[in-house]
Image (cartoon, rainbow, N blue to C red; front, side, top):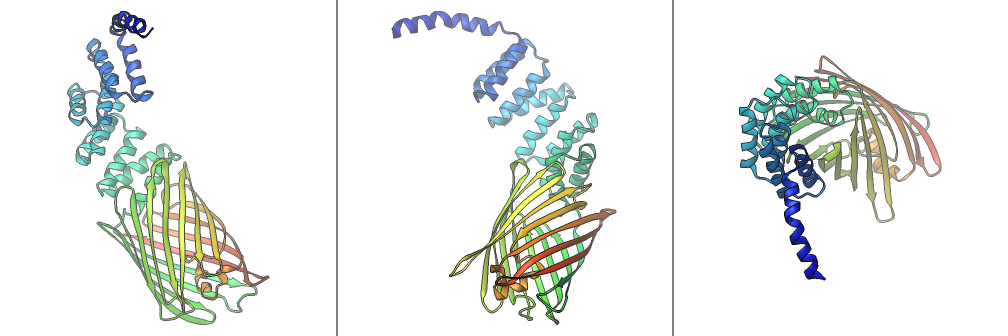
Length: 411
């Protein structure tokens, strides 16, 4: 039976080969795409694409496809040969510039990629794919001003472009080398404390070749007493995907602020406009409090969604804090409305001094909103309000109302 089957295949093979050779260029192109996308059989795909080009040497779409397949298989010399041939023919197709620039960008030839993209944008000035790719290349080259121009142009064309929105947020942190800021937070308690709280913070941010560094000073009036705190934070960039948060703080006014605080997080900019973070925060009053944090975020059109948790273990139990945040961006990276809801106290809250007496182990509900906007790109304003329902003693609750104002000048 096996011999008969083999003999039959030998008889049919020439007919199959003859049939394939008599396919049109369009039909061979369809077969090549099927081999690449459905079967992941790139050698067969390349063979079929070449056969199609033998029949139709000027079939631009097939040449671009062949260059892409060579790129995917890391045959860079063959890919460049295909794209350079198209360049000599002065091909003006949008896909040609995207494919050629992508090859150079993926292989860290950023200058060449920008040269290709600039030429492509001369013919297709409103191409969203070309604008997005140019923003990525400029961002990767630390050319943040040009990256911002491209992504802002794209967002004017399509304000709901998810990937452009996510990239604009990352670029925004680097568009000015310096920034000074001031914040004010007012807290009122209906039962827990007799005196209102006032906290003023000033900060200076400097962009360095490895990332941003922020120096902060905080002055607070809490429990009818005053205190100061000094903080230093940095966001070193590790790669295209990863960056760190590293922070430390000191205060000699324990109780109003922790004596020491520290924190480290690994942050990742993930595919599909996701982002994630995992790390720890440490506060020292008279004893250390260790809090482990994780968060996941997602950009979708004009929205940013984020869920963060803080987990604080001790000898008796594990305390949890959860916060969900939604932002709606109205224009640029600094213009948005935000809504927040959650449970528990986090070390980033103005209530962090309450962690000293283990209040964080009791039940807390919080909800609030925020509005941020920019004037002439370099003047950033923020206003927010937050409501807390705090169980400050077992089975005893009180309400807290916070209002915060902020201003930052970038230069």
